[in-house]
Length: 485
Image (cartoon, rainbow, N blue to C red):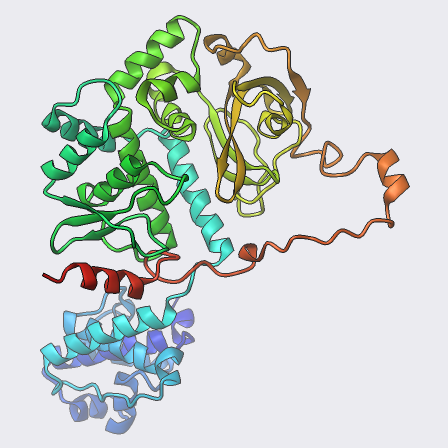
């Protein structure tokens, strides 16, 4: 261990030097006193205390003896004092490549440097380092964040009791007990939480809502998009305040906050108590259907499908999986706690992968009857699953939304009598659907040259900023205009 410490880099030498200086002063010795007892020059000892000289093991042994400590004490895990910790941190930063790249002058660190100045300088350099090292989330980082969050959701069966409790507390406060949550009740919730609503025609293009936290005003717009429900947008904006969110420090935190506020909005639109009662009755009648949950609470099919995953395992004992798949076959969102095998990359990320052509979420695109849900059994390497799916239009294309359950749970659902059945060997067997049939390949291989549609968003970094994709200057200018008397 000591041999390793002797050969460590400058960072450890800095800590060692500060610890020696602290122990020397604790013994009431001057630099000259200790140098004399070590039979070395004060200048050499000064270099050691400033982390600029690497001592030999024999010298460290004598040093420990003179200072009255064990040799291991010179390499303690914690700095000997708060000031020493700050001095070490400041010295590390000033010797680091980020600080050097800026060409800034270094500050001489000595006992004469006031403590408040030292604290201020360390705080400033922490912020400088954070800003210099802050990187836009790359697609790989975004996929990793998605994977981590999905594992968290799976570990909790996608059920968050604390968010359910917050939502129920608010519903009780405004007296909403049953039925769809109207725009009027949504406005009552905002008022109960101390927020005023204003509809404007000119929200920044990169936003769905803007909250003026200083004046507790939420700005919304009407009729601009078919992609979201105004109630959900409002409730999500309120969710950030109710759940105590602060400005996200990275993409992972941004993503987690978004998932939590979406959950909060769903728990208000489809309250746990009434939604569970509705689903339990349907289960007892062996007539569970996502579209019925959608219609009962006047929400989108996607919202109903997400909400089903929140409640199915916790309250109905049904494991399940969810998919949102683009018409190109690319997975946009996915969740599972039923053992289904989604395709994944080396990091475990599912988003951006291509789903098997034989799965219900792909087959539904070819079904002529888009009014009713499409149901199918699929035999997979992980077992047989029954799935129900629908398609919905979005500004970025057509998406399928599907809920699936293991064969044993299919008995609780309407549509379990479907005769549609397929076999999928994905993701383990590429010959299932990722490779063209042999006869087709033999005829056309080497004779086709498609012009690929470049998905540049897959190569670009995630937008920068605390709220990726949002033009902060535009938001501030918007608030400045609307805050004028």
